[in-house]
Figure 1 (spheres, rainbow, N blue to C red):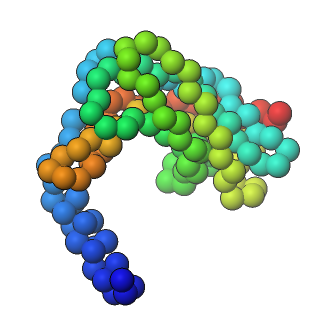
Figure 2 (cartoon, rainbow, N blue to C red):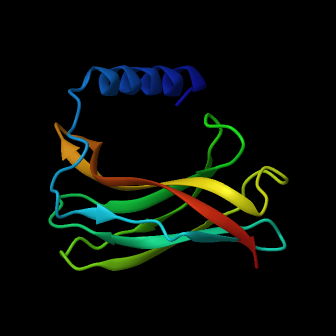
Length: 142
């Protein structure tokens, strides 16, 4: 397949997703995601964030994703993702990632955690958000 064909297919899929109806921000008030008040930065720059989640049902794979930012509200760094088990029981999640060197340091930070399902809709897997949480935390050196 040529690069032009791949780009055309990608652009078409993006337009289709933009035209899709908005999905609900939260499917069930019983579904939750939390962020622990302390995150860790290892000597090599690897960041670890954690918390808990609870979800029910789901027809596609569900993940807990997280991002963290400091200094600027508009700059966030994705910190891994964890596969979730949606059985109605509270579970622990922990994500690790290595952002751009020097972009994060010990101190105050803002974390966003999202519990999101890739839900089959019309032959495509579209995001369905089960829960989301924003939390101010302290990043500590570990």
